[in-house]
Length: 118
Ligand SMILES: [Zn+2]
Image (cartoon, rainbow, N blue to C red):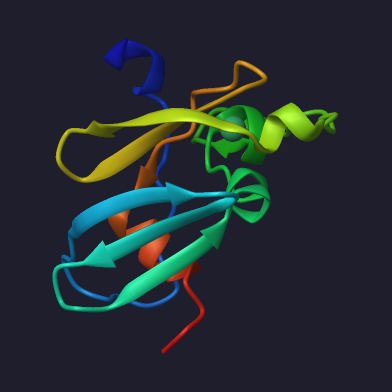
């Protein structure tokens, strides 16, 4: 599995919110709720979370040799249905969506950056 992600550039959060880690991650209805170890709580709608998928298929990637722009994707209701997720390397989570998409690795820093609440 890891070789699949070697080329993936992890997005950088808009601002550095430090090295926070989730204490708990729960899915309630269509919301992914994260309680961070600094006491902050984040709530992400699954649809918004999927649309923010940072993987190369969704967001494209650029390296020195090539720029890859993905074709527009057709997202269906199952694209926003979270089947499950797993921790990756202690710095990220990898959601598995009901439409079979599971290549997005959301670093904690990226998730925290997606949270627009102060
Ligand atoms: Zn993706």
